Length: 310
Image 1 (cartoon, rainbow, N blue to C red):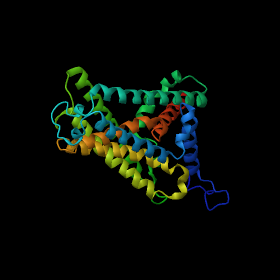
Image 2: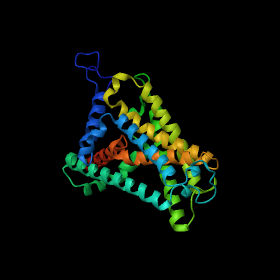
Image 3: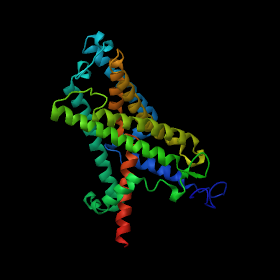
Image 4: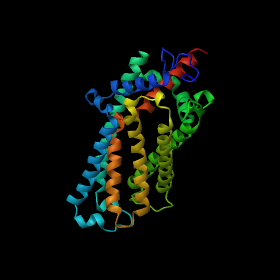
């Protein structure tokens, strides 16, 4: 409505284009609040940066599997509990991914704290009063329905395709995170090593989440290419599609590994999957992922202001 129903939107001389302007502003915000600031440049030509990091990461895991093991192990058949760790020790895997994940979380939190202080002139501790309402709005994707009419698709007319794809992506991501969390409890709490049987909880959660993270990002890709060009910021196209591609590749390589884990392809598939996931962790604070963080903080502020007015 802010474009199609605006009397000053193109071809008017004023050329008011709120969607495109807000897209550019959001991208500038991501870069401005990147932590450390020296890495803010990763938001420019983001698609290229993510591609290079992913390629290097995958190559690093493949070469590591070959260098630290007998090269023949890469193409050998490994089955049963602990099969993955014949190629990479669990402690090494946990340390490597743990450090990358913690570093990403710290970078995201630091940027979020600075953003909150700059936009509210208050401590992040004051965000609590609107937290639960904002959380509910996030899970429902309340503001992604264009005021009830849907979002613009291949035409300016409103549709719900983007919202549905977002739901699949969002909940798919949460299910995959839950799968990893349960597997961690299995390993350290119950002494059970991956890979797990098809019917076990980590596999069920991961499979359902992986399906969501294949269909959802694919839908977002489709909606992105169908969306009218005049509503998009062409300078941020790589950033928008780069993160979607990473989510898709993470789930796709994981599902392929699940189906072929008892074949000679397991070693190379494991290296590719770990490389993609490691790259995802490294680039989380410098990708479109942060849009969810800033949107959530904006929802908290909106809830606080709404509550204050009632």
